[in-house]
Length: 290
Ligand code: NAP
Image 1 (cartoon, rainbow, N blue to C red):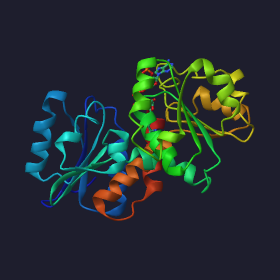
Image 2: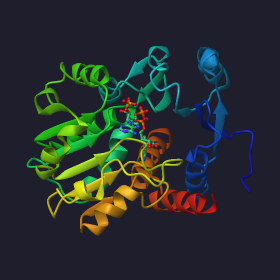
Image 3: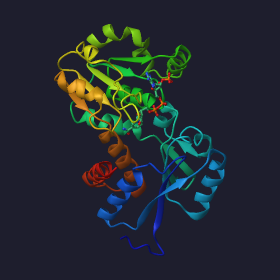
Image 4: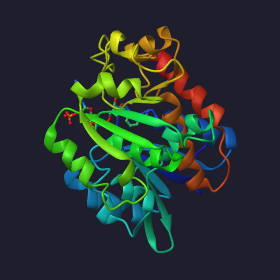
């Protein structure tokens, strides 16, 4: 049991709902391992209370915090500064206190690329296909741009949302020339050219655990050395990754992204290396318990 002292510094996560968040477990496990005098707390904050909550955090000296649904975009104008990564993604998931006020970034990008960087340093010949065009797909596109992939194909089902997604990247010279948008009907031909297939849809997650965003038959279209990456971390494996493994493909689930985005945030707050293995194990234990 952690001893809370008069000097204990506060970190946390704001969202609505926030009860399901695994971040407190992961961060407090790392804090305990490091023996630093911090505590990471979940804060349920309603949309209407966001401005008041941030002002309150400032007043009581909260050191930093994560942001989850529905505040990832809404928080941006309330911050003094936002990194280029967060601007690119259009969302902030990590905030810290600086002398000139709150600063925000998006560590989902770092989290997404971490397991890929561990596999290879050269992504310049890689064609990526991304299923879905929601919030997580934005971090994925920024990550694929950072890796230097040669083509990024986004697959969506809503014309207006797809076009809007496409438009928001057009003033980003590193991404715009790589990006193409498609409907799901184009998948058969897209998959045969794909080296990396990323699922950013919630299909495969509870309550859709018996579904996969693509059929087993379509999975056969992928090259034998392709990588299948599912952002979903529970269940593990998802049906999508089961199809990929049966096809002999390399499979990555969303747990590492979750761990690495958290580690990147904690490093910003503590300004020191953090025990990633402890964070990963605490999450695995928590997921097994649920
Ligand atoms: P989101 O903003 O709601 O986007 C979901 C996307 O999936 C949208 O483009 C949506 O299309 C599409 N979609 C939903 N159901 C679909 C279906 N049945 N068929 C085809 N497309 C469908 O959600 P998000 O925040 O991006 O999160 C997406 C997933 O990523 C979730 O499972 C989340 O848990 C996971 N995630 C994981 C991490 C991690 O650290 N591992 C981080 C972030 C997110 P429409 O807009 O047309 O509905």
